[in-house]
Length: 381
Image (cartoon, rainbow, N blue to C red; front, top):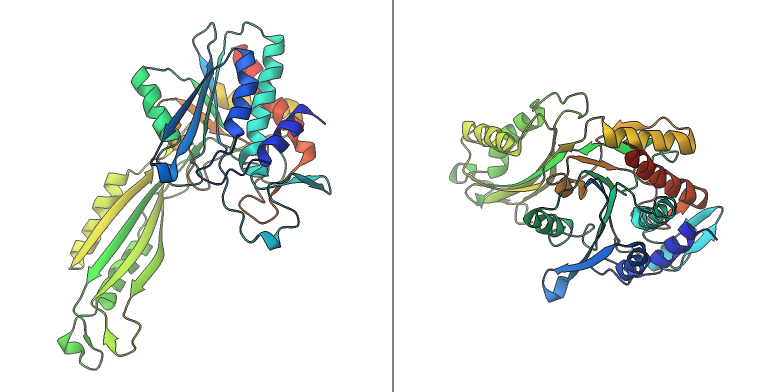
């Protein structure tokens, strides 16, 4: 059994549903400390939702640092009877390794660690510094995880230069896609107020659903921006509409509409908010609107880190990787505040969050080799 497979199975066996880490981070720290890493556990959150974070660092001679970032927490399993095997007992079938977190993202964390072990075996006094930022709060609210560690590092004046987030980004073949950025996320909860009344006497009421529809139609048809060479155009989508009492003869007194923007770097959360308010005001609505900025967009243009990853993928798999900014948010949005070059790269993502989540066993060591070659490529700069 390869070292990467062994460590991946160790991590999958830990029941680490958000915000629990199980024993994943102690297992990782036990491998890093003999390599010269100073390991620090940073906890955050209330007792009912205690989050564990690991910050481990080994300085290099150049002062430049590559951070491997990831999460040990996993999403709930769903109905256990639908799994072919216990989701927390690593199982092999048809060349695949099954278990919750196999793809998202315990394989990447194991590959990080073994790649570093192999790199340091041949580079005992490297110029490049190496660090690990591992959280147990990525699949949850992401309030007490990576963002807390980044704030602490910023307060200390820690300088980070490169970061690889081990999110599963590959689509059909290992290495066919990396994320060199992500769109921002802006959520709105709109409450439009009306006057409740009998549905047979509309002149005595004011229907907020009827009033909201023209404004929603305009918002849905608006071109918010045209994107750029790295980002698709900003998207506005309604996710939920709640209105009415359940009775068929009452005009409701209010309607609540949830919507979300996934926005490109050519737009800002402030500008989008102002434009939405302008539409609602123009339609004369009596409304309240609460906003939540889930994440700002970030982008790493082709340069040292992107080039080092592309070269490592090509040398290991022969694949010419595609740069992409599609998909949801990740902890890269927090790390990008303190690190100028952030990319995401990991195994095939087809089974993440699903019943019978799995990775191809044949991809484990190549993934480790790619991470090791990235270290070698950055060391040579």
